[in-house]
Structures are given as structure tokens and as C-alpha cells.
Amino acid sequence: MEKQKLAIPKGYRKTRQREAILKVLEQAEYPINAEQIFMELRNRGIDISLSTVYRNLEMLTKEGLVVKSYMMNEDKARFALPDKKNYLVCEKCGKIVIIDNCPFDKFKEELIEVHGFEITGHSIEVYGVCPECQKK
Amino acid sequence: MEKQKLAIPKGYRKTRQREAILKVLEQAEYPINAEQIFMELRNRGIDISLSTVYRNLEMLTKEGLVVKSYMMNEDKARFALPDKKNYLVCEKCGKIVIIDNCPFDKFKEELIEVHGFEITGHSIEVYGVCPECQKK
DNA sequence: GGGCTTTTGCAAATGATTTGCAATATCAGT
DNA sequence: ACTGATATTGCAAATCATTTGCAAAAGCCC
Image (cartoon, rainbow over all chains, first blue to last red):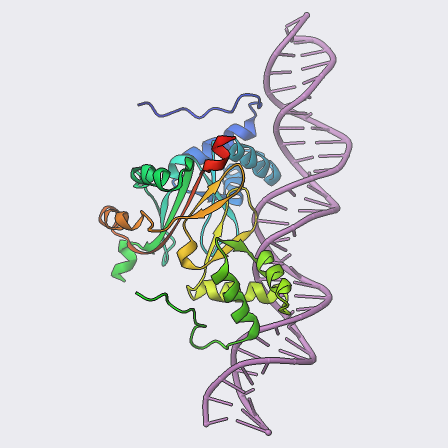
């Protein structure tokens, strides 16, 4: 199984800004917010406006290339590629750890059976205290 | 196991508005937003202001009596008692169905083992198409 | 019942996100 | 490569959910 190369959806134009946003999201280790993406792009010397960041995130989310989520006690949305949508958050230090091999898949069948839904996606957020903070 | 009667946390006062908000949340079938709570209270003849609703939701969330969540494509927060925090959402009609006996519990151990986190809470949101909408 | 403190309502402030519009960039067809 | 048609961008202004300041009202401990 090859890692799927991220491509701009059919019908949309390939712009410098759009590609740069996708690259930032590819390189991000966990979900980040619009402002962070904007600043990172500025740091990288990409000339872009915050509204362009928002507009692209909206489009990418609608197209399913990006997943939007909200974290407890935060008022802004975060964005990430789908493989980073399930994560653990440390309540003490805020550290975020991605959950790989999401356990949810094993329960898809059970949920389908019980509720009759045809499942298209999910998002899981787990709160807790990370090993480092437990020591303190 | 008795159903735990909802009580206002120690140190807070028992006010008409606060109790009414809790009652609305108890009777809600799934997570609802601040505006909906506000309107429902007004319908019930409870005189309350929207900011009081927000202030109480904030306090109740902080105290853990209420869980805040965001739904895909929605810009406002929703609130629910903890037993209604995991749900299925139909992408077509918007129907929300609570997941009882959350499968997540079975994976808590696995997550603890793999990541070393001490887990305190979680929230699961699943998207799909409900049985009725599948027929159409 | 009084006084101390929390809570409320209102209006104004905040802050993330969205939008209108004119300028610019992309891309398909030539 | 050139050009026109259309998507995209940047900027500033607008939105809209949520928060906050403040004075009045309500709860609660003694």
C-alpha cells in the first residue's frame, strides 16, 4: 500500500497558496488551526492572506481532503489530513498524540448492525494525562 | 445501578435558571446548542438571558456535568449530558442517534497500553447515512 | 433577616470566520 | 505561447457565536 499523494481535487485550480497549505498540513504532526497555518506559511516566505487560508480549508474540508475538529476548551477549529483526525490530548501540557490503527474500525460492524447506519466517517478525541505529566 | 440524579455542584448556588438549563439538557435526546436551550427555556416560560445560558454551560462543562462538542459543518457548540456525548449523525437528514454502550470502553486498555496516557474522557462522533435516508 | 457573595440581564466588546469586490492568476482551447 | 472565461486572491468590512463589564437582584450562611 503506497502513501496516497495529495492532489488538488478535480475542477479546482492549482495555486501556489493552495499547494502550500496542503504541504503544511502534510507536514503537521497533529491538527492545527487556521492562524497557525497562516503563520507557518508566512514563515516559509509564502505570501498569503488569512482569508485565503480559510477559503481553502473550507474547500478542502468539503472535498474530504481535510478534517476539521475542535478541541476541548478551544474556540477555534483545527484542521488535519484524515490520518491525523483521531488523537489523544494531554490535559496538563496539551500534548497531542495521534492514534494510529484506530480501534474504531473494529467497531464499525457493530455500529452498522445496531443502528443500521451506513458509516462514512468518524472522529475520536480522547482526553487524559500523558506519561510525562503523570510523573509530575 | 441507579440513574444518578443531576445536582448542582458544591459551591454554586441553586438558581431557577441553572436548574432549568439542567432540566432541558436532561430531557434533550442529543446534543443541542446554546440558542436552542435558550429558546426552549423561553418556550417553557422561563425568563432567562442568553448570556446566562452561556455562563452556566461554561460552568457546567468545567465541572464535568456537561460535555461540549462541535458537529461537522456547524459553527456553534453543542452541549449534552455525558451519556449523550457519543453519537451518529446522518449526513443527509441530520438525524442524530446516541451510541449507547460505547465501544470505546473496550479500547481504553489498548490505548493506555500503547500510549501510556491516563485516560479521563473521550468523545466520538460518527458520520454516515441513516436507514431511512439509505432507502431514498 | 441581614449581609456577603454569587448570579443575572443588558448592552457592548471580542474574536474567529465569512464575504463583497476589484485585481490577478490559472487553464483550456486555439 | 496567446487569450478569453472563470476561479482565486487580498483587503477591508461584515457576521455571528460567545464573552465580558457593571449595576441590580437573588441565594445562602449565620
